[in-house]
Amino acid sequence: MSLLAARDLAVARGGLRALEGVSFQLDPGRALILRGPNGIGKTTLLRTLAGLQKPVSGLIEGEDTAYAGHADGLKPALTARENLDFWRRVFGGPPIAGALAAMALQPLAARPAHALSAGQKRRLGLARLLVTGRRVWLLDEPTVSLDAASVGLFADMLRRHLGQGGAALIATHIDLGLDAEVLDLTPYRASAAPTPRPAGFNEAFG
Image (cartoon, rainbow, N blue to C red; front, side, top):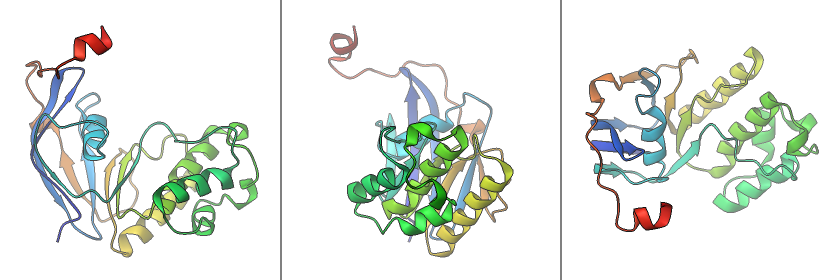
């Protein structure tokens, strides 16, 4: 049984269709790499699958998802430990010790997020995935700001997640050493036809 599937999915950005006709199935233990030129709609697709915006049409099956986008989702005044515990309580996930260890964050646990470097913030944002307890990870360029050692830590964390029956959909151009399929979004690029805006759009944003 698949953990996440899309059926003839169309998504839009800025009132214009970006992709249409996208279909895939993501089974336990599998990773799927999204590829395509910049601006084709990889982020839009991931945000739609995460429930952050509605699809134009089509069907999404599966809701057990955690999304890691370009923002790290951190509260600057909280320590690394407090940030992870905040998200653990939000999602009802497992204890944070494993997340701290996975991304080598123990020495930084008591440091406020605003005092972390860009790479350290990224490691903390990715460690957050582990405390959600969600089985499907939706990852948008997850290795941005990471050095080679940190990329290795993340790849190990991801392989363990897959080995435990999780799944991942990843927009990346970095080789993470995964046995993963590739979904090239180029054939799904939509025409520039405008997407109807919901009632009240102009009133709310005019």
